[in-house]
Length: 370
Image (tube, rainbow, N blue to C red):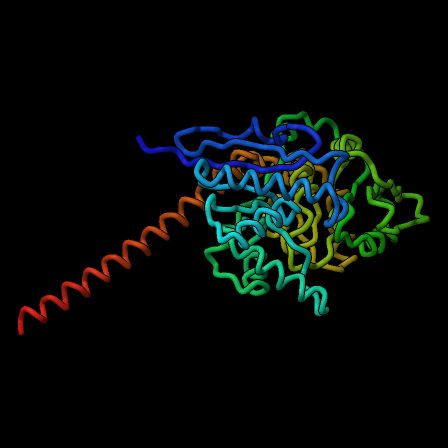
């Protein structure tokens, strides 16, 4: 019987707790035996790179990687977190390639034309040279990171992001009278406010105080730093979701987008990296161009005036989540990416052996003929 692939998921926290999606994926040992470990960080998340907390975490990672060399085929970390950086740096400077390091939901701030940004990218390119595979949340990100890091295409793969199955299973209930926009990072709230200037559709904006948005319009209500449970309630009770996003090279906006779709809410979202891979125009949502207040206003009015369109788009969006964007889909897709890369590597390896044998046989035949 073939030995199953063994992988270790590494997270950090104040206590040993499995990720929220742990019970939603298929832990079939015949395909992959997935274990999880939490590296403990006292007092919460790291805020400074150079601190006793970061040193403690770094030492824990060194010990963990040393123990994992013979036991696991892969280690998983998330995004460009401190854990991803530490694991990659240790394996790079130690010339260690086992276990193979896979970064899930890989994302980095965009490279800027400043000396600091260029040095950061150069250093991260060195650190991530030991990483086996980076899983991106949009197709366009693959092209961007290939260019920014000068990586081969084999080092990157696209796997659509996922959301909790509880949102799909929950009763969406009756829709409210308001539309809602939510999120703090890379939101184009200026364009959104301009779109709602001349219409009376009620709008709730859930942002951070750092977004610095204000409005005196009576139909616009702005809430700051709302807890996740309260935000989920606001999404559930809304008529539709509007996500105005900035145009970026990296993928943005998927978390709120996917939860909204799972709740069977029609969405109006900016067509940028990270949304066009998830929304089919006028089938599972409405895509609008970046910085286009008129397009947002027209889409909002269209949804506001057409209840049947809201129902059709919302139901199709929920079906899309149920069929393709749950944790089990994500885990299965990552497994497929790894199998495909192993297969390609084996083919190249076997091809090299076959070429060497062919050359040897050709040379032997020439010698015998002489």
